[in-house]
Image (cartoon, rainbow, N blue to C red; front, side, top):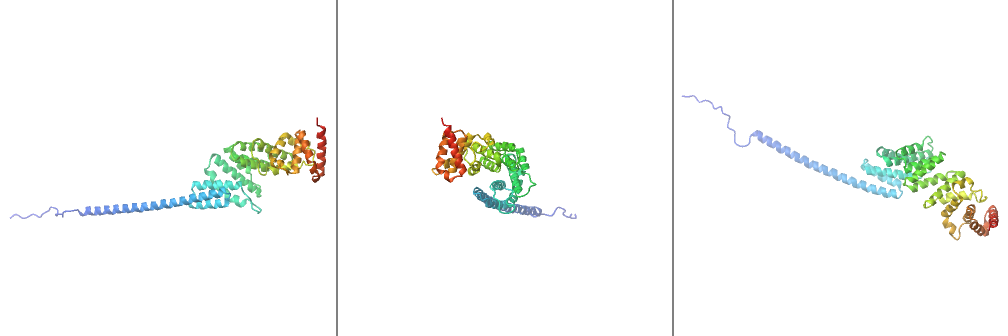
Length: 362
């Protein structure tokens, strides 16, 4: 009888999925589920980030709009506060940084010091970090503008007593990158006259500032301030030359120009028309141009029925100096009824001028 050999074939496996395949499929389901959950979570997170970013941007835009309105209303402290709130939301936002720089420059232009021993310090110290930061990324005209206003900050600190500062250093650095920069040229000219520097150089820089075609009103105001600080005949000539230039350019007289020009002639009231203003002034601005500029400046007062006697007297003097004999004689004679209220020396000069001009009649 043959002995049965043991069955060495592999044990019979049940039909269906093998255990390792089932585990693999379960792992795949888990992985896929995890990926889906991760994706959902990621989308939700991204949505939240985008929503927060949009909300933040909306806030920034609103604050920028408010700051711009405050800037236009010359409410610089409030504009600055609005921009600081915007910077807290996003300190790297280019729109915020640029408007901060613009507000800083505008504030420095219109600055009004307080009553303390250093009237400008608090504001200047607040604004200069923003200007310094702007220079790091700016170029061309913008960079020169920022440098010039940093120079103006140094000038204000100089006025506060920090006499070791040299505003011209900043101004010249700005001009090295932009030779026609309106602010650097005008401010350097102003500084040269303020510090008793080279007046011819100051004249050249003011001319370049005007030629730049930018900010003419600012340049004119700075010229008026600079020339008004000069003294003596040279200062009078500078003021008259400036006023004559405005007239020839058909520009509108500056609000304070009338009051700054008047002392030039007021000092001459009791002096001979031939000697005051002196010849050095006449060489800068001819008597004819002085007369035309005087009429241009004081036109409204001269033509009004109650025009001031002092103004009409100066008109007669200027016509006399410009060789307009008939008109000067008529105006001198018209003053005669009002002489009783004037300085006796002026009355004597008027009577003398009437006699002199009458004798010259053909």
